[in-house]
Length: 309
Image (cartoon, rainbow, N blue to C red; front, side, top):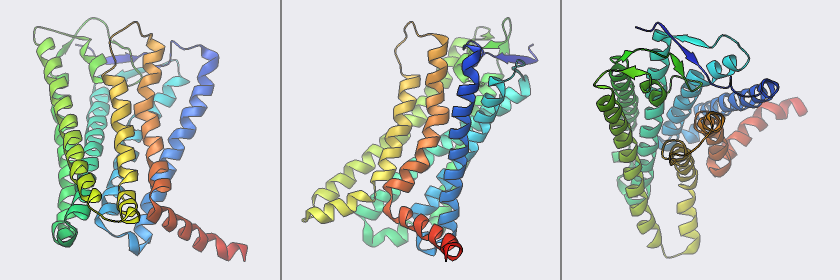
């Protein structure tokens, strides 16, 4: 049985480019952390933002920070290191947390879609359906669901026997790259099962989000004034944009057709989902959400106006 794995990652790239990649991804990583922390701090400090939508956004920022912290620091360290091994236990731990926070993120996007559906299609029942206790319960269920998915996939994968090569052609313990190293009769059925479980959960979330927006668009079209339609739809723009970015980049990576892709291009494509998507999310929410943008401005003015005066 193998005791450790070797992460190929960026080791195949020209060595003179690695410091450039390191600096680029480090800046994106730091911006992701600071952007999400700024959103959380603003929501916490502004009483006007103590609503279900921003509670879910706060939980989403938390899941993004934890997902990024699980994968990116290790990737950055390995870029400048010649020792790229990871122990069996550390690999399993990384896979568990990355799946947990990744699925929690998807479940939260689904809950946020439901929140917009209730707010627009059933405004008179909003305070009843989205009560503080109900919202806290929904957030708890998303984290519990993410943890169950993470534990299930990790136990299934690491129940297999790994023999022969211990080289993972990825910068993280990527499930499909890891399954290629497994041996035994059940490897194919386990691979199929893992793909089926993951795709079913993600497509289930996406289907419910799409269904929510079908009802939302139908409700918006019934609003007589153009200004009313624009104002109502503007409350959904940031969430819808993040959903498109999240599932768009995931589709590019996992649903791309099999072809003569080089290992380097596959590595760069993987970073779009792991680094670039979390980087874009706080930008989208802070720029496209007018209420949050104004709250951030107000918060900065309160902190810095005494200094300037």
